[in-house]
Length: 358
Image (cartoon, rainbow, N blue to C red; front, side):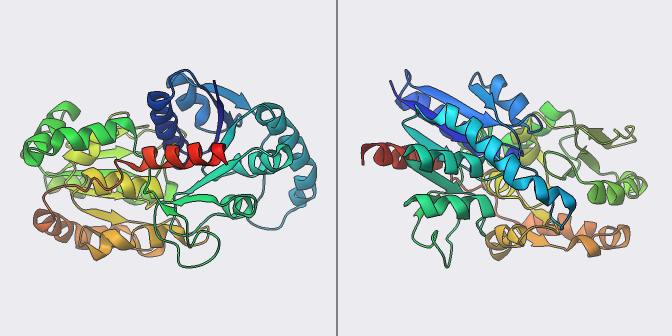
């Protein structure tokens, strides 16, 4: 029986692909032990136990984006986090990392214990943790081609999809329009009214939420249905006309399928899930980071299934001027999703199996 450690905590963008790979691993190796690393503040605290996988918490290494006195604590926090990771990894057969704060200590601990490392990079621009880990491993996989650096020759695996998204793609493949109508019914919206699905990532977006709050009257005047995921930490607005706000969308596959237009961030997971099930999107990339969210959306823009607007230009005036055009473009968009990521989890499992044998 092998022990597999998965490191991908923090946001849904890191946790969901890790869960997809864990589920695939269990299909191939039902008796193996799978252990997730996480911190007390990440979504893994909810998602991993709900999926019936083992979770071990390690100290989080907090790194502010701007210089601050907290940087003085980074070496001490890192030592503590690596030490905790090492206790879990020392008996493992392989570590599979997906980026984020949890992954960097895991990679360092795996290097110290000589444990094989497999890394999956979801974004079109690799993040700092995975760039660090790539120094210790040749077993690299990517969701998008990378033009330079250590990930240039990585396995092009795609991005592992949530089980409900992949199943929804399979189920909708015979009759996409009927599946879209049925999804609207399950969500409680009229089937013949255009539906706009708005989300700002797993934590929500204050900037996007503010613009949408100013648009509720306009949405109702135009008799549009709106499903707005505001984030669990944000105030939940009251329902009004066809506008409905929720803290978090559990039936994400239905939301993608049912929506005529999706408005949200262009994180790697969002783009892959939309590619599988969505119709047309307006992406508002996160303005911080290394610009990966702009690059993530590029292929969908090229396929005429999406457009991008910067957060500074995403205003009430912009949305009022463009909402009709977005719905018109949706009507002309491709009438079927894309299932290129369906085999991604199996490819990463195969790469990890290979790494364990070397």
